[in-house]
Length: 323
Image (cartoon, rainbow, N blue to C red; front, top):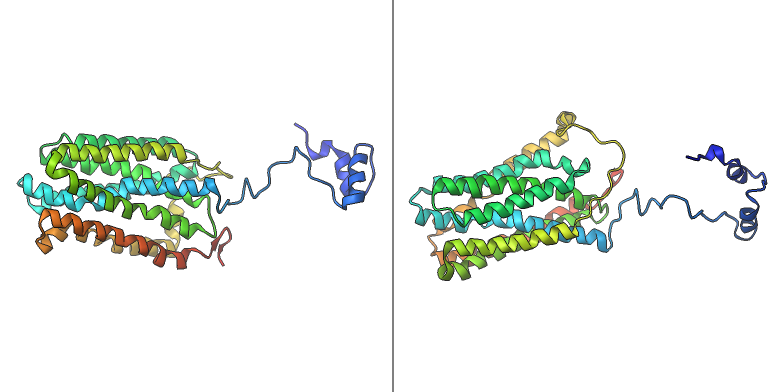
C-alpha cells in the first residue's frame, strides 16, 4: 500500500519544488492558484466523518424511529384499554392486572441499558431484528391467551424484551445523523408514542365490540408487522467511527455526577408517569367506549411537549458539547 512517503513528487509540490510527476498539476496551479483534489482522495468529512444533519437519508431515519416508538411506546401507553378489559374479564384485581403493563415498561427500560450499546459497536441490525421479531411474536401470542399468567408471559415479558431491544439502539441511530437539528429529530421520533397512543385505542374502539378480543389484537399485530417491515427497509446505521469501548456497560460513566443525577431524576419522573394511562378509567368511572375517546387525546398531548420542552435544552448541542 502506497503512502505519502512513496510519493515525493506530491510532497515536493506542496514545498514549492518542481518535479516531473507534478508538472501537470503545476500547470493547473498557475491558473487556479491551488491544486485540484485528486479523484482518488478519500470522501469529504462532510459525507463521512461529520454528521449529515439533514437530507432525505437522515430524515428517513427519523421516520423509522417514529415507527419504532409507535410499535413500542404507542402500545405501552395504550395499556389502559387492556387494563380495563382484563379487569372486567379475567376476574383479577386491578393491582394484579397492572403487573402485566408494569413488567412491560420495566423490561423496556432495563434492557435499554444493554441494547443501547449495540449501535455503537456496529451490531444494530441483529439486536433490532430480534426486538421486532419478539414484538410481533408477543402480540400474536397475546391474541391466543385466555389466562392471567399467559398474558403476563406474552404481553408483559416477551413484549417488554422486544421493546427493550428495539427502542434504545434506534435512538442512537437517529442521533448519529444530527447535531444542530438533533432535538427536532429526537422529538419527531418520540412523537411516534403519541401516534401509536391514538391508533391502538381507536382500533380497539372500532373492532373490539364486533370482532372480539382475539381478532382486535391480531389487527394491532398486523399494524406492528407492517411498521416493522418499513423500519427494516429504512434504517441505515452509520459506520462505526474509531475504537469502541468493548464493555456493554461503561461503568466509568457512574463516576460523573451530572450523569448520575440525571439518571436519578429520570427515575423519579418516570416512576409515577404511567398511573394515569393505566388507572384513568377506574378513577373516572368511564364506560369502556368513552374511555377510548379519553385515552387517545391523553396520548396525543405528549406530542406538543416533545417540541416545547426538549428543543430548548438539546438544540445547542454540537460535536464539541454545549455551545
